Length: 221
Image (cartoon, rainbow, N blue to C red; front, side, top):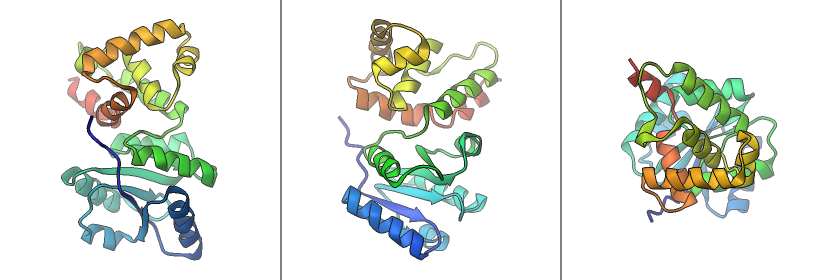
């Protein structure tokens, strides 16, 4: 299986005592390289195998576009947002940029570190409510005879979306109002259709195919 683990974190924010404390806290708890860079430094960096963590309070649209261009042209680069207000704030970024995770202003340092660890391992980190909204928006924009990727049914798409959010089989069953046995059956079919053999591989597939759901809506014309 391909190793999707990233080697470090670039925090794109203004240098301040608060951001320096956050930097040291994350580095100590995750035992990885963590750097604070400003917008100009990031553009000049040759980034690879890193998570770019963008502070929503200190970036603009042009910086986001530059980061996305770099991430697209570089190997093993993921993007996530920090200091988002709520799901409404987050969904706008997910519809316009290829993010793999987001953190809210209300999140504790422990929550942020747990999410960063998952993102460094190639996973997704977002609230289940946000994932549900992304799926709902995808459905609202689906037109004509468009079908989900890899021949997945809409229920299978729901299941893998919840899986990508970190939900267990029992939690997926509760969220979708089905039995745990039904969830296992759907996951078996999903794995077969998308050509993976493990939960981690399925999450990596979801990262590349479910985040940025507006891409699918754009094809339905």
